[in-house]
Image 1 (cartoon, helix red, strand yellow):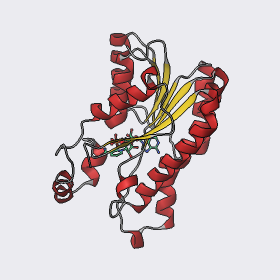
Image 2 (cartoon, protein in one colour):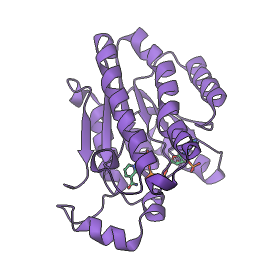
Image 3 (cartoon, helix red, strand yellow):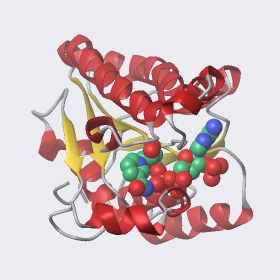
Length: 247
Ligand SMILES: NC(=O)c1ccc[n+]([C@@H]2O[C@H](COP(=O)([O-])OP(=O)(O)OC[C@H]3O[C@@H](n4cnc5c(N)ncnc54)[C@H](OP(=O)(O)O)[C@@H]3O)[C@@H](O)[C@H]2O)c1
């Protein structure tokens, strides 16, 4: 129960890595504001089951992270419901694969809207509560692409490396309020995003460059998020932890 009596916010938790973080956090005693783009009866049912099983409160909240007004309203809704947020996990993300010369500025803007600007916006609003309470942990989900410079991923990888830099700078500014900000850079992880964007041929080639010779399961990323969210990591801030099986 590493997060007992804590309240967390997780974005993009209807599937993939985010859903696994939601399960892990509830199992560890955290109440969660579960942020997703759209309402979905299956997700609401899953939240109800987890909430009863782990005896925590799960509040689903629906908004589109590419819409600034919706982000503001969602943050206001959360702040109306609680004056204490211990953990913010910014996990939502979108990917695009296209060669640099073929990638339009509009494509970069679209990717940055979700992978970078929404993170800035949400972090600024939610960190105010943490600053007031003088405690908090923010975890931003980056990607190994930010370090590897994978072909065809100029927009995605740039958005993720900007996110890591943002986390580092913000961690220095908010450290005095005991607010920690870290990034996690997963490698290939078994989710819809990975399956839709990674052709079989590339996957085999990539596996040969991974020391553990396999892709990650989402729980292996969620466990590191749990560590950074919990007091076990109380002296870690401004870091990026690569969880990539040894890429
Ligand atoms: N899987 C990998 O191999 C891998 C590797 C490195 C980093 N990552 C990062 O890990 C994070 C989670 O990815 P995943 O693999 O779990 O991908 P995923 O299964 O595609 O999930 C992405 C999540 O982001 C949400 N999202 C996307 N655009 C949104 C928007 N405009 N507003 C609100 N929510 C939005 C999606 O909601 P909808 O269901 O509504 O689309 C979904 O919940 C991402 O930041 C990704 O970049 C993944």
